[in-house]
Length: 437
Image (tube, rainbow, N blue to C red; front, side, top):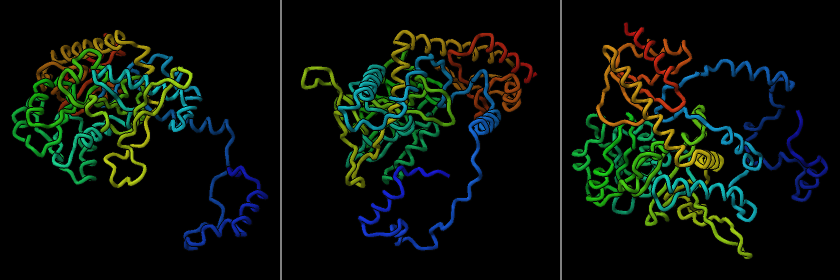
């Protein structure tokens, strides 16, 4: 097996002599002998490029690739324009690391600046950061940035995605803070329960819009209730829905967060995704991670800089209120490209098609015996149906190359995006009808 160390044997010996050693193993003399591997690694023989390609192709063939996806619950199958796939694959972006040296990282910094600008506009907020790991992390970081010495309790709606609730709970456990889940009523946040739980110790309340069941929450009233108690209002948003719904800022939110995967990222096995965060100018110094700004250089030319790293503490990390120290720059570039390519009208068209097709499927399925909406009210592109034989329906659609809605609590949580044609939706209805009959 070849060596991955670029220096020659002679150069290594010269370096060892300079520090008074005769063998590199002496660098590990404090390690117990029993922990040292004194033999070559037991690795199989290497394969040729063609053999490796064939082996990987065989493994990939074991995956099931569905022609139609009707499942959301946090990851959404949207159409991705070819340019959005092509540009991030260029090596100058693909291999770029954190832009510590701003003077030679102008391209990466500009892409982050453009991303931040578009996210801020989409949320109606004053500023956005350079993105965090994913939507659940963004929710947890938002809860952390809202706490102060006197207010340590975080409230979160039971209508939030379960993974987000668990991530926020993990963060609270790590800082020894309290998380309280606000009960729901008819698929939405119980406002009376929220009022009862608010007190002087509550720092913030988080609600997902649209929520886990696809329903639109009454964000304006929830914000008024939270602010009346002196707490901060955090909204977790679907970025595609933001193209047509009221902005978080106009609904009274202090912080807007969400999962950026719908903005040009394919459905992967859990990622890589990105979490977006935006806030008002009042809270800008509490944002975790980085903020890229625009300025001019000595000659008056436009330039980009790392403007703010207010909470990222490389020293005394045990006292830091956030330890986010990298950003999903490649995913942020992808999201920025998607938003720039689609434009406001294009994103609005995607959102409207998602909403229209979801309502069409819901209406057609509810015509079948034993099928009904679990919760009434306005919804975006997801809806929860009470229906029998969910596993049978899932398997029947799978045979047609269609991934059904998510079986959930004796029902099924369906999702429809702009990619699904009306003919396919009619086929789904026919298959479900046949299974139920």
